[in-house]
Length: 103
Image 1: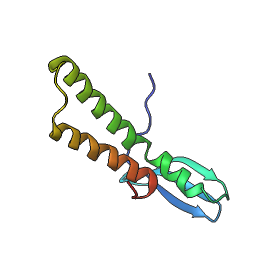
Image 2: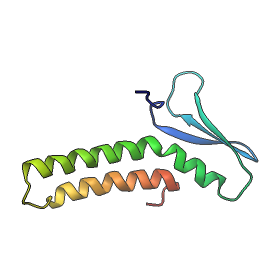
Image 3: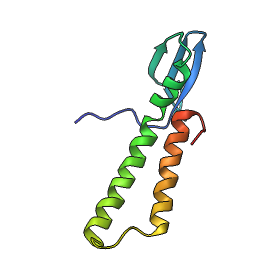
């Protein structure tokens, strides 16, 4: 199985028609994940969504683990409020990363 470049990723405006997705906090030159060569009005939004992919994947993995744990440990009980709040924080963080801070 292949793996993706570890996150977090961020976007950089390369020029008027290109947005780059790069690995954040990388020592040395930031490795480029992708470049969007697009002059349409939604190029930045597309770049943000791509850059948020590692955070969204981690949020989904955490939610999956909690759901599976609750299913096997407490099959007849609903998740408690603290669990739901933690899941909501993960989801909100992923959405904020994809939308530029608008969860």
